[in-house]
Length: 109
Image (cartoon, rainbow, N blue to C red; front, side, top):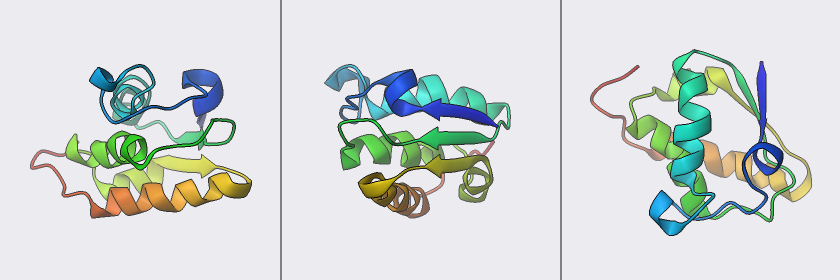
């Protein structure tokens, strides 16, 4: 299992939805960190702790955006695990709500 710490490997200050909104966007995290690993069917442990927090637009684009990119919700549930403590635990529930609420793309991986 590969571990990705958002704070240590990406940024301590996650930003907005799209790259055009600046560094640390949900789109950047999804495309540069999540998609390459998921395409290889790698199991990921994503550490949510250590950042200044997450906007809903970051989380929706990073994780809900995976479904729009063609990954199935059941596939994501098998490959993605989250590690979080304290207040950061609430983000895991938000992430799965975004994944489950996103309409699947017509092409799947």
